[in-house]
Image (tube, rainbow, N blue to C red; front, side):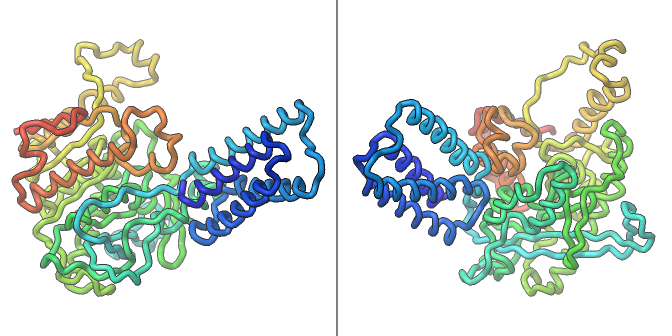
Length: 485
């Protein structure tokens, strides 16, 4: 919770306790406390802004003020009967639990302050690939369109507007309502969540140019699901382009206001061949197209920011989950990318990895129990768990083989214990409810993930030789690093 919210709730609880237990001995004090609470409410509105989770606290503030004023004018205390007092105390406690619980469970969170020396700027671009048809619409003349948000080291004046965490909240609200049945107003409070980036700030002149990284979100995800990771990279001197993979993102909003939701025309979960095809036919061409467009930005940027500041000889790509698979396949298809990273993604894609990648690649995964190949299930066991032999062979044999091939020319494997698949994103910051039973707090997980991400790209795009990958062992007991020669 934010400071005025904490002060308001704390004062309301104190007032409620005094009102129930001090009887008529502190009438003037109660009125004074209620008045201060009203002032805090106004300040919370003015500084931190309204959010629906605080509505019970707003209501409680006015009720306590009214009740205190009534007691000041009354000559008798109305809750002298023990049963009435106990009942009031029970309802008061329940109300306090709700009042405090809602803002705690649905907080206006902040991503960790980036540790690097650079301030951060951001600008968003809308690009249309006129050479490619959009296969996920019925319009035969529709072309593939992408929204890309670019983050870069900046020199801020202080006059720039701070970028919101969610660029198009109305689109996200509509998406979650249509796809998951969650009322749109439920997400209204997220409009108060900001990034550490200034919109269209001047790019920093501390360096002649900066290495470029492309980020691919998970499926479904959005370009902002890894903002805390992106900001950390940018603060250490990287330009990062985050791609919304249209119709495979939970929502995309184009400049004309058109809202594009996650496609309904998706394969079954175990249609492995179709998922391979989506990576190869859509995500890889999207990623290559974005790099094409960024090359043009380096010559002429309509926003007047990035011209000449992108080091196109030091380009990398990273992604989470499905986006991590896209990163591997994009490096296989396009030698302009010099290094890549996959965060816990199944290696989908049609590109043949039998000879491995020529570029350095990092597989960062959650730690999973080792499976003994001798324990291969029989047909009856497969039937019991609802899996076909084809499914089992793909998951237990094909994917591990792809991983071994991918890293065979000098790749890295980083295994992190006590986290899970979504720990690589910002999702667990949205509510402690999502991570209450996790062994590692979200911010601690982000710190480890960010340290190894930065170390990998520093080593292979900046040529540093004193990174985490140059040490004999990891400083984190939860991490195991393997270099595959």
